[in-house]
Image 1 (tube, rainbow, N blue to C red):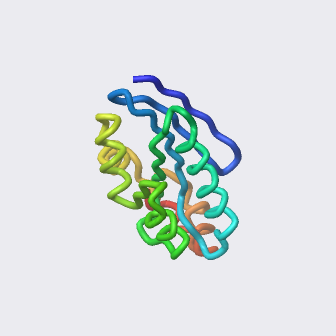
Image 2 (image 1 turned 90 degrees about the vertical axis):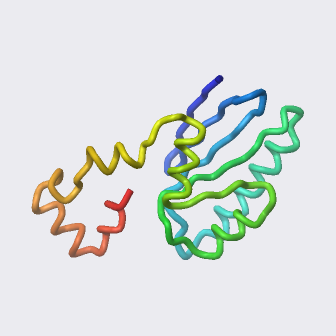
Image 3 (image 1 turned 45 degrees about the vertical axis):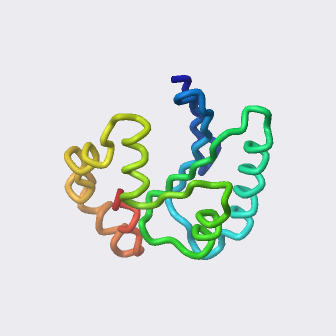
Length: 133
């Protein structure tokens, strides 16, 4: 298996080969209310990868289980295999052989790992949803 990893600001991309099929994987935390431009960019990127001679299979893994219609646009596009929440973690395990969801559940306890002041700040600012992985 060939593996390449890249990151740019809020975007993480993984490229790998499995059973002679090339894959490009985009990772996102979630889809919020203002994602039209990002969705259009992702559709363009996937169409480019699929039209390359190597014919990449494009997948997107989204951490959040609840997403809006922009995620559904990608899922129904026919050019992205889009997975969110537990379904995304299941696919990650399928391709990597590692159960990262179980590892996270077993090893991370954000509410007790952060200082009390940090947790209170997250609660006060309605940011605790970012602690759910």
